[in-house]
Image (cartoon, one colour):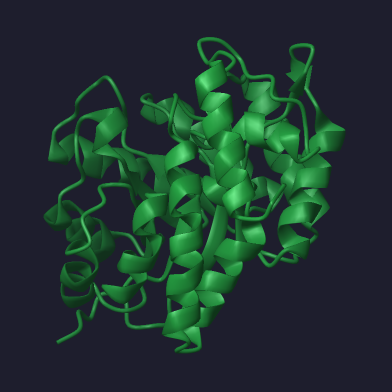
Length: 301
């Protein structure tokens, strides 16, 4: 039996991209970012997520963070939803970023579990409630205990949905494919469940999820979009074919700390320079070979 907290259709579905943030000589490369936004939309991506982990948000100034969000919204021009990253381990800072995103015209905000602080579930609840109040647009909870240590319990998600209408979904980077059916029963089919783990994108759909926020789709947007479209049209063989083709690319994108590998791949495709900000450094030669091999397997280069 489906839960009744979110009965409507999910607002955010399909193949979405956690966008890289291009730099040149230490500064934002706005022209390359615009090119990336258009490349994504032209290749079927269903939604864009600027200034998340892949977008190196921890190393951006507030002005840079806000600039990237604004450029993404302006360049996409309403063609796909924009879910702006607004994460911080400071509730006050996250609220400020979320408020800006809402005023700038984003469709939703993506808010990561506070890292380093290790809050209790009560602290997480208060954090997300406060940020949702500030955002005034839908909020996607980003659960990634591999980076933030503390997981968001299912019971906390239920409590959030019971008490705030703007809590609209989850980016689930736990790789727990038993979770989508649990949340369907606890919350309902209108709660967007988005995989945050590329390799589990298809299994997550099969388990009842609605899409994926992907790193690999920076490089292979068409293949990821086709996989989601095939699944949604009951063409399961095609969906699995694309999943199989992409699996080594997914692995290669995390052969070193992200976004090092994906930025190297983006440079190979002529999208932007591979430059990242410290403490992310240029990937090693053996990692470059692994990335190039994965690109060739996907017929991208």
